Amino acid sequence: MEAYIKGLGIVSPQKTFDTNDFLSEVVEHNSKSLNCIEPSYKELLNPTLARRMSRIIKMSIAASTVCLRDAKIEIPDAIMTGTALGCLEDTEKFLLAIIENEEQFLTPTSFIQSTHNTVSAQIALQLKCMNYNFTYVHKGFSFESAVLDGLMTIAEGEAKNVLVGGHDEMTEKFYRVCDRIGYWKKEDDVPTMELFESKTSGSIAGEGAAFFMLSHEKTENCYAKLRGIKTIYKPESNIEIEAKISELLSSKGLTANDIDVVVYGINGDCRYDKTYNHLKDSLFKKSTSTYFKHLCGEYQTSGSFAMWMAAKMIKTQTIPSAVLIGKNKSKQIKNVLIYNTFLDTDHSVFLLSQC
Amino acid sequence: MDALIDQLKGEIIEQLNLEDLKKEDIDADAPLFGEGLGLDSIDALELIVLLEKNHGIKIANPADGKKIFQSIRSMAEFIKANKK
Image 1 (cartoon, each protein chain N blue to C red):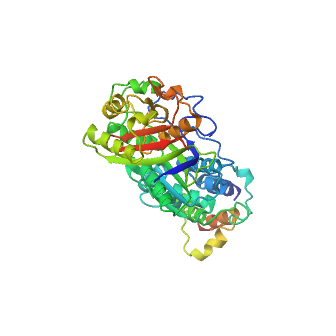
Image 2: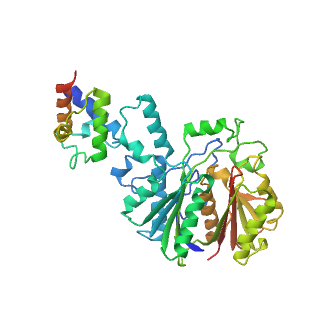
Image 3: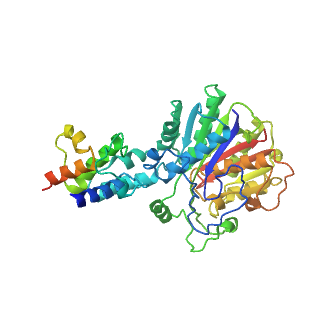
């Protein structure tokens, strides 16, 4: 199962909306919660529909629109999205109204927009696209499941061009809830650009919406070839993780030595960085190491930011200095592997290669 | 009546997220649905809740809805006639 990445669009806490740019300017948030830098929606969204949309819906529609334009495709054969939290802001609004109004005077809009599949549905509504439409909600495997479905649909010949995306938003209330259970760092000052050096527990919160056009055919403007994906639920040891990665690589005729760059999901939480450090110092000690969560924060579908970064690295053959760990050992970027985990429970591996 | 119309305009802008509109942009006699403000069926539900929550008025007969929600003025007249 393989597919070409024909187009992409992303709204993130960085200035990533311009598809021609690749982290030429890095935004240092220096906060424990990184919020997206939103584009101007006026030319991207239908104003009648937009007035009811919450932030995550607007960000996702904008990212998917840019992705479609980048791929020069008007109507995709299928739309698959992954989200762990769905449209959280609308869910909170609706639930709060139930409490405040003692279960009376409930308005329909926030309820209608609060479901997890709202984004996929709104994209289809805007495009008038009646094709296959699916939303995956599997915590840290949400985006990965959407990608897997995209690859399988293309492999089975049921679709040629598939729009795949991942989106999750951070709200003030959800930040506070997660803070209570130790997700985020406790110290007041968190220099985000030094997240890799952090020796304390907890991470920084993030959010984002990223979309990719997966295609059966290679075109001149393709970013990269997505060659495979693997998910590992609660791995027992580093040996199991290494075995799964090697399995994926050998199925593509590759070894760890063929991987030029590894994108790690290092999030600055000393409880979970052991796997990354192990891989960096063993299996991939010859590869260039990079990371990304200091730029976008930690969230369940952050793998989509990593996939955007890997695709851009391959297409531009550059590695922005802000994402480098140590020295750049790669003369050429042919193969990039992403290793990401959410809370050491949901582990995922993506393999991308030059077209 | 003018004060009530002005109040309704504000409530509708807020409830329906008509961010780009100001009170003075809305014609009190213009149709709410189709032309005029171009509202739809979801907005109709929002307006029913608005009447009940902000003005304590329930629409007993759904068939009256078309007449009540003809314009902001017709809404104001309905409120004035039914306010306890």
